[in-house]
Image 1 (cartoon, protein in one colour):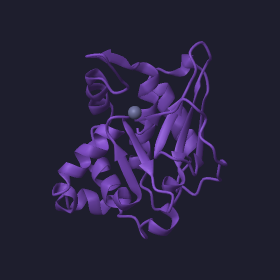
Image 2 (cartoon, protein in one colour):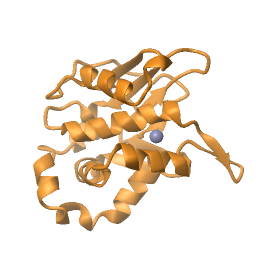
Image 3 (cartoon, protein in one colour):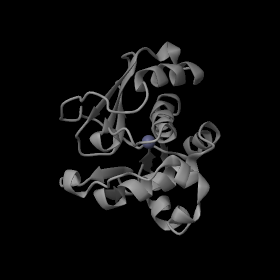
Image 4 (cartoon, protein in one colour):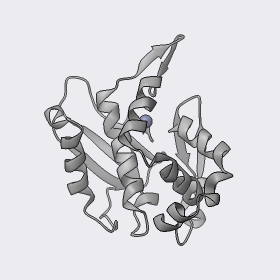
Length: 187
Ligand SMILES: [Zn+2]
């Protein structure tokens, strides 16, 4: 993703989590489930930064660092959305970037295949993200990146759509397939 990869550590300050659940416990659980115990500890930070989410690691060094933008740091962000993005970011530790037709792709086809299997609820989750974040982000397909506008604080949506609403009524996002596709390809 999300979630983009980052060469540099994002500039910003880690925030206290306002999520409605224990995100660190979830991260540990997912790391175990995905067979990533042996990669070493993975840290998690919520902070203001240029992209929506990213994971950073260095070859030869254990573990990695996952960063989520402050846009995710609200009690009305559904756990399934956070879990989707966490699984996506952790998957980068399993499926490396690969060169295809002379271009380095961080999300080669096998990445999307694995993500589909890991996140069966991904359509609803992408739908939620488009409804919640579309006005606040700029997608950048060539760089596989989702930028967050500098004015995100003013532009953010209150309240975010509820997860139940997304599940109950797919028509809320079914007409947004074009936007979902762009967001997916950027993440
Ligand atoms: Zn990614």
